[in-house]
Length: 217
Image 1 (cartoon, one colour):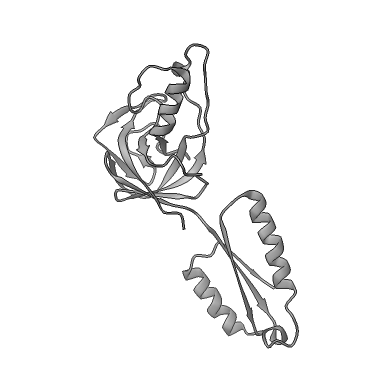
Image 2: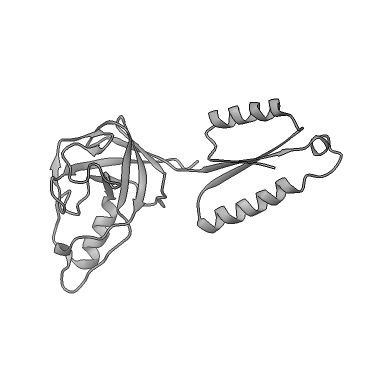
């Protein structure tokens, strides 16, 4: 697993679209940030790492900016090396966020001297666990890994009488697809006799282990 930790530099909110104003803390419920314009949408909480803001200001020779001016709810530090993907999670304070979208344009007030960039660095999240977020909170990055389980049911294959061919073929096709769409993945396999009892046992355990995909053959 990828273990990366960052820190909250500032938190901001606004009842209107556009730049936000720094506040002492953000209170989150299931709909998003209480009092923020994006509560109730698929982009409940937005986050930008300070490194991207600094890079933008250097490229454009922009004036100094305040926290929240890029319309971000959370200005972070230490997350610049992360290739965020949908369903990744961020644990901040006692709250947990899940990534719903990556990429946002900067606002027009940052267009200066003919230079304009629109980096794909804004991270949008929804609230998975309610809580409170404030400056200096630690940010724990929890990458999403898609877990798949392929179960072959065959008395003879499980006894080694003949080779299982369908399980490996499914593995090959599934891995090819997961690589194509560029997600992190883990594929496990099981070969069992034609036993309903054994299958139920494995399925119950797979549910506890939070598999995303189960294929039987």
